[in-house]
Image (cartoon, rainbow, N blue to C red; front, side, top):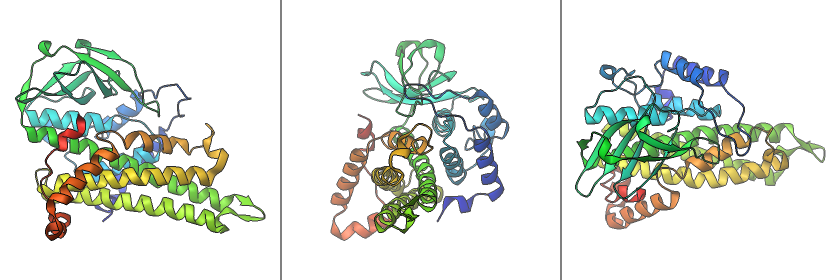
Length: 354
């Protein structure tokens, strides 16, 4: 099931149009991806900055199918925007903790008492930092004004802000939440990154097909060479596999809820599939494009760099693979089919963040 088939086509078209209109030049190596307040205002006016927030808290009340379409549209247009951090994580966390939510830009992060600082996406641009803190005996949430934190600018390989944030725990007001809230926070972030990776890889498929269809070598299009066909097939099949796993995870979450045993398993499978697909897609795409694909002027690296950056956030490929392996071994041969169909609890999900 393609998640976009579950969303109003007019809404998808509107999302794609907005991001295409506000596409900006990719930062030069070493530069940072600047937050676009004009785009954010447009998204806010359209109800997209709090797309999945409940209507009672100023959100649009949409589901993860719509969120998938939004994240895919942004990634396909190579537009960096903190929708994941503001809506799917910070907004959800505040609602779940029973704390007030308003329209000011927020980002969220997980921390512990032992950590002196944390890498936080878009911290420099946010007005509030929503911290999910682990103590020896509990999990707690606080909505902290940025002015009360120390923010040191950092960035990922795309130039997106991944800032170093330090806070004084004693200066913040904390609200207790359950261990399960912390697990769901991680799962939501992981699934969101998978959806972004899929959106970028699908654009890579399009760029690669366009390139081999129009480029001529030795008197015939590149698409006629068998070696090139194999590279394109690898890009397309791995992207399709990642999308299928992502769509299955979204469908399971929407059908059963985040507390169902199969939610964590579905996200873990999607994270693993997308992570492994990213290696093949990025490698093959650059082989297909040759030297031109490595230039700053070409569009390819606007998608391959984010794919590599996003796949390692909210747990690396190796960490999710290990969690899946332990779960499969514990299920055993007799319960393998039940694991696939129904899923089962996955102890140790939060160990990924250690």
